Each structure stands twice: as structure tokens, then as C-alpha cells.
Length: 124
Image 1 (cartoon, rainbow, N blue to C red):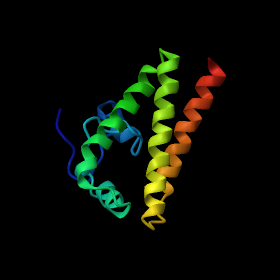
Image 2: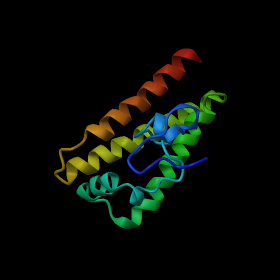
Image 3: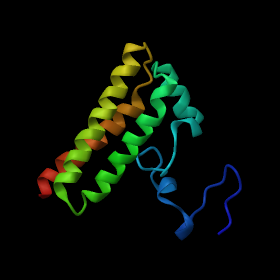
């Protein structure tokens, strides 16, 4: 399968989950924060040391995997959603402590994780 031109997104059945759900924890499997300049800049603005990047990327990937597995194993989904919520609460706190008021991303993603918890508990 041919890759799209730079700056152009694929559409149809060739589109991957990362193109369909940008910004979610599992949007691009294997996406390190270093590969996305916007994410890297936001993390630097929040005062996150470079040495934390691999650990934070791994935590986001595990959260995404847990949310997917949670579709079949409810308690794993709830645990993953709690972990993702705590991740984004921590991100919001880091931004505020550093004086960075650009907290829209972590707040929205944290609220989506809370919604995942609520929906799973209501449908369990």
C-alpha cells in the first residue's frame, strides 16, 4: 500500500485508527512524543524532562490497549480508564504548575477518560 503525500491524509479503508481518532491515547501505535513537534513543545512548556518521554509514551500506549481490551473484559477497561484519567489529571497539573495555561488538550482527553469510566459502569 502506497503512503500518502506529506500533509495529505488517507481516506477510506486504508485509513488507520490514528487518522480516524487523532489525539486519543492510542491514536498512533508507537508514536513517541518526540515524533510530534506539537506534543513535544507542549510537554516542554509543562516542564516535563526529556527523560520522562519514553515512560509517558508507554503509559499512554498501555492505557489505550487497556481501553480496547476493556471492550471484552470490563474491569480492565475501568482500570485503564482510571489510569488514563490520572495521566491527564497529572498532565493538567504539570501545565498549571509551570504557568502554562494551554490545558485544553489534557482536560478534554481526561474528560473523555472519565466518560469511558461512566459508560462502562452504566453498561456493566
